[in-house]
Length: 346
Image: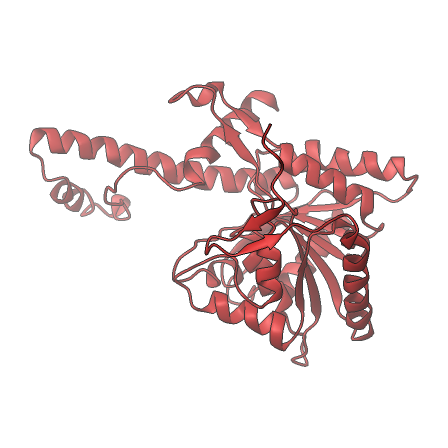
């Protein structure tokens, strides 16, 4: 039997020992002191669950938020599981280094500024910090698992990580804390999977208040405009009830550039969830469609660029895209599957 790993190795090869159980108490005390200082400065406490390619940059953007007087208004705690696969992100962030590499130079500058200069961002492995949160942003993955290659219909939404995270949040947050799911999920997940989990945990703790749960999907595009694709981009949001909807509107107006990129507010989370799935599956369908015609053109000696240029002369078809290498990346291949799964299960 292979012994468990006792360290986490970064992509650059640097090794970090995993924290022992004895270290959890001191880590919580470290965060508690930072929170005490932040509250004395009237800052809102935000916990970001998941420090991947969305969560790490979102955490820094929120940590960089300033009020009308130009003062930092939020203190952000990024929380990541202390697993061999991902623990290394925590010490990197706490040194002011980005755990994600991108073409956008603003990523490194932003994280360093928030950690080292303004001191509005820290990272931890101890999920007990959820007790301090005024707002929790959820950026953990929701996958789609195919059982057969090429057969999306037999696949299933894999919500295990999201469900575990929601359960942990429900166990530890205070009543009145807003929980915002940014993850792309199957339509219906926020209302019919995540909310019941939070309610069950609140009931177990004998809390009378209803949990405040909202949804606002990310549209992050890693590349030269990485930061802008989160901060300076159009957002859609919704809440499970009016208070959550009002709270998520306020939070996004403060953290993101909604002046130049207006916020769209939906009535229910299933509407905002469906917006992301339709958006991505529409894009995937068009890419797949043009790829099929590209294969046809290649076999038959047809110049498809010339064909598309001829079609685009018609005003109603002027936005027709040119073919690429097919469908790739992480999001487009799976999001249509999440939509189909929701169609079959809702």
